[in-house]
Length: 337
Ligand code: KG4
Ligand code: ZN
Image (cartoon, rainbow, N blue to C red; front, side, top):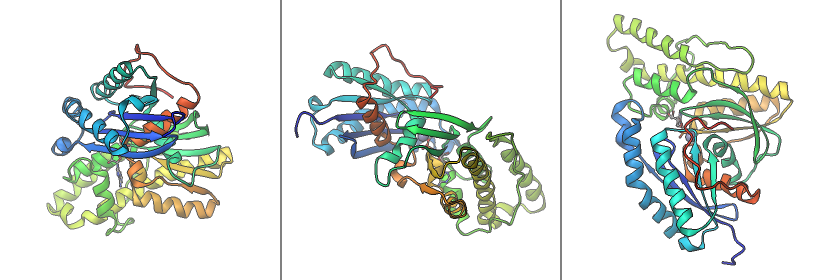
């Protein structure tokens, strides 16, 4: 390969996925992900267990990414890594690894904001969104509507005041006795259920803000009352309960997204983050897009949940802009845009 090529090794370790990817000239060559199953029985990610698993996984995952791309580490142009937001101990593993490797190879270091990277995952494959566009970024830790003006210029115009929507999916699933992460399981059972069977109260918030903590409490009381009447209520109605929960959450997400799109007069609309894998959200977004005449962008499933491919593509645009950081940089659990 000619030396003018930009070869970036990307590292992601913000939560419960240890991932490495090699990105050459903005093309993601691979995206190796080690998912931590250790959290399944705890109903959520256990931070200390996540850090330990990252430590075990990071060397093999990086090795595999380089081997798979047939690239020697000495050929790398830069290393990009997730600086935040995320779990401090988990972020520290990726941050320290990236810093040490960049120091040893004497190449630039690029910090990446995990939430911006979810949005930039749209630039991995075609079709790529046209600027400006709105991105509904929905994950286990965040729910944001972002106005994206360029690869590196973005502003949050709406977000949740409490729980993230992924958390609402996962906590509802936990109440139903499902393992973590419950979001994909709610999605699976919802496919066979009636979304209008049960009604859950939607919390209405001013402007473009969201709130998802009330719905979790609503579901808790609803289940408690129903279980008093019939202790097999959950197993007999699992599909309908999941479909109704999903319907409520998706509705809340899309109503605010439509409001934002109308306010900002933007017709290019994207979704990103783990919850953008949800089939109900994807389907209802398409229906809304037809009515509102939107052009929509939905990422490939492998780039919805946490992955280093998106950290690499974000790193590529920052490399082009000359945005590097020095060795003093440390993990930022609450990193802002
Ligand atoms: O982006 P992500 O992998 O990690 C964070 O940055 O948080 O998102 C994980 C979240 C979890 O809450 C998970 O339950 C949710 O995304 N999720 C889903 C689906 N797939 C993942 N939620 C609903 N339906 C899905 N199909
Ligand atoms: Zn994420």
